[in-house]
Amino acid sequence: MNDDNRRDDRPKFQGDWKCCDCGAAITELPFEPRDTENLRCFECHKKNRPQRNDKPQRQMYDNNGEGWQCSECGGRIDKLPFDPRDTSTLKCRDCFQK
Image (cartoon, one colour):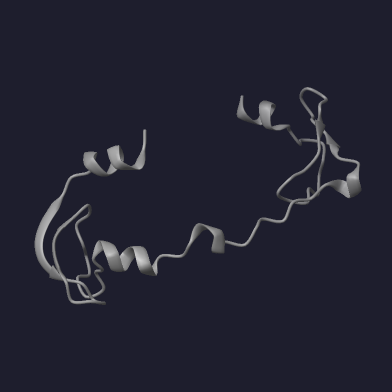
C-alpha cells in the first residue's frame, strides 16, 4: 500500500483554520485538531518537517569483528544495533521474527 492510498482512506475533518506560518486558509485536515493555533498548511508542513536524511545513523556493534551466535539456530550474528550485556538469549533476525 502506498502513501497516497493511506491518505485517501483517512476520515477528513472540515473547518475554517489558518496556517500559523503563511496565513493560508485550511479547510480540511486528516485529523481533528486539538490546538488550532499551531496548524500548518500542507506546503508549510512539508517545508518544516525534518528530512529523513537528517536523522543520525544508528550505531551498530560488531563484537570486534567476531560477531555473536544465535541462541536458537546457532547462526552467526554480525552486527547489532545495541551492545549486548548478556549474549545467552541473542537471536538472529530470522529467529527473532518467528
